[in-house]
Structures are given as structure tokens and as C-alpha cells.
Amino acid sequence: MISRRLGSIYQKLYACFGRQHWWPAKSPFEVMVGAILTQNTNWVNVEKAIWNLKERRVLFPKGLYGLTEKQLAGLIRPAGYYNVKAKRLREFLTFLFREYQGSVARMFSCDTRRLRQQLLRVNGIGPETADSILLYALKKPVFVVDAYTRRIFSRHKLVSEGVGYDEAQGLFMRHLKKDTQLFNEYHALIVRLGKEFCLKNKPRCEICPLKH
Image (cartoon, one colour):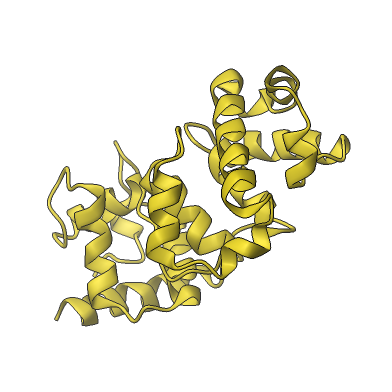
């Protein structure tokens, strides 16, 4: 029953919006950086910060690792909370070089569960950021949950209001085929629906693709 409902929701969203082409990045490392920078800000501001890093030709592990925290903060200023995010990026880079010798390629072969546990131990990386890195950068079949997911699926009575991250994630992990492309597209479609129709204060239920 739940599997069918989740499948039906996906099909309706895909029919309405089409493929979303997430994550918009040129490399897995760029996805990782973007996942950290997008915390508490919108993607437009993240793109400006990413552009600054590309302009300085430092958007690769050794390039960012060679910057001081102050230099990094100056370059990512458009993303907001730049001092905090510079510190988080430094923590992630320290982890990347300590555990994987600065090689993103080495991370691909790591067991998903172990890698997730490692990421969650990095200061400033929570479940949503860790899972975004796993799914979008490393192509691991892990479903990403965000505020849009909780809002939409609680309104459709599939999870309770105020549901925790793990419980919400479990809904998808248990009832959908563990497929990277499916999880990628489904989450992107959820974000699209949340931004355009299932708004926090004034949901546009009368014209929502999931109206029926």
C-alpha cells in the first residue's frame, strides 16, 4: 500500500515536472562543497560562492586545502554564514585528507554505512548534508530528507508532523527500490513541489499536482 502510494506520487511529480538534472555540478567534489555551502541559504547564493572558487581555480581538494580559513571565508562570502561554513569546509577537508588522502575517488569504494558514520562525525555535517554527499556526489542509494519532504509527506499523512530525520528517511528506504537514480530524481521532484506548490504558509493545494 505505502509502496504504491510513494510510486504514484513519484509518477505524478515526474509527469508534471520532468527530469530535474540534480545535482548541478561539474564534479563530485563540487557537489560535496555545494552540500556544505547550501546549509541555511538558497542555491543562487551558493552558485555565487562556487563561481568565486572556480575563478580562483581552487575548486579541488588540494586547492581548497591550501587556503587559510580566512581566505576561504572571503571566497564563499555570498553563501552566508561564511565564517561558520569556512570552518566546516576545513573540517571536511581535514577528514578527506586524513581518511582518504584527499582523494574523492577513494571514497567511492567505501562501504555506504561506514562512510555515512564517518561523515556524521565531521563537525558541521548533519544527516541531510551527509546523505546529499552520499547520494549526489558518491552515487550511493541513500534517500535525502529535508524540510520539504517532512512538510509534503506529513500533509499527505504518510509521516507524522514533526517527524524525525531517520523515521522520515525510513519511509522511503523501506518502501522503494534502493536505486540511486530513483532517489536522486524523487528528492529533486519533492524540492520542486515544495518550492512551487506545497508552500509553508500558503500551500497551493487547489492546483497542486498531487491534488487528487
